[in-house]
Image (cartoon, rainbow, N blue to C red; front, top):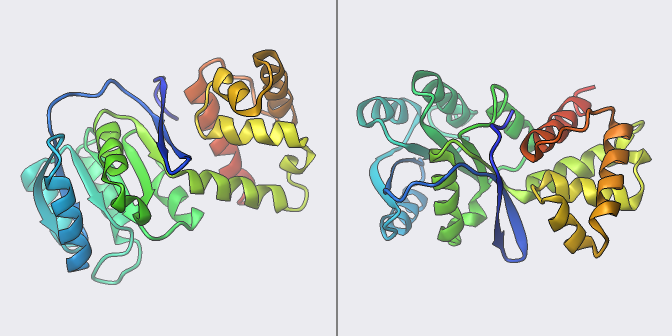
Amino acid sequence: MWNPRSPDRSTVRGRSILAMSAPLSTAAVRVLLAEDQYLTREGTRRLLMDRPEVDVVGVAEDYDDVLAQARALHPDVVVLDIKMPPSYGMEGIDAAHVIKTERPETGVVMLTQHDDEAYVWALLEHGVAGYGYLHKVRVGDVDQVVRAIREVAAGGSVLDPRIVETLLAHRALKPGSPLASLSPGERDVLALMAEGHSNQGIADRLFVSVGTVEKRIAAVFGKLGLAAETDLNRRVAAVLIYLRESGTR
């Protein structure tokens, strides 16, 4: 579950990254970058090196290399892809789990072209604090990559909005899914809530009153069989956990 922190919104081309925030430090974040493709690795490294908020302390090319450098350099954050040598399976996710086990304070940002939700659940199977998952299209918008790095360094969580959209779409189409029982208005509220909006933010987006939003949220939790958490971060986490579990039945 997410630690109780206030949600932060960072907009990219009209879409918002879900970020569960901790207070951000003003010190440069020490980053280890792991990517097997030379051009991608060097391009990302150069983009990050131009930012004063980030200090790229090392680069790695494969599973063994990233673990060795993480142990030697003790970076604040490791940025890596899912599929890496030697077998191009899920070495990046496996490395992330090893790194977090050995140094739980290290943040991990998965920067990948893969948006299959199975990878998301594999990455987050032990919790979400200090993890980020972004699509590589974000690398062209270095502000958002840097924001994600700083969030996970502070113990927060970052999730690409396309993942939330995919989860909701897949569950809504699943036969017998409780999501199918939601009204269009309730589904809109759930989508915005899962993306991290406050009740006021949802009301503003949907042009309804906060009272209407609260009623729809109560209906959503009732239909999904979830307790109405008072803390927004725990509530969003509960929704995502529901979406995960409902996808494995």
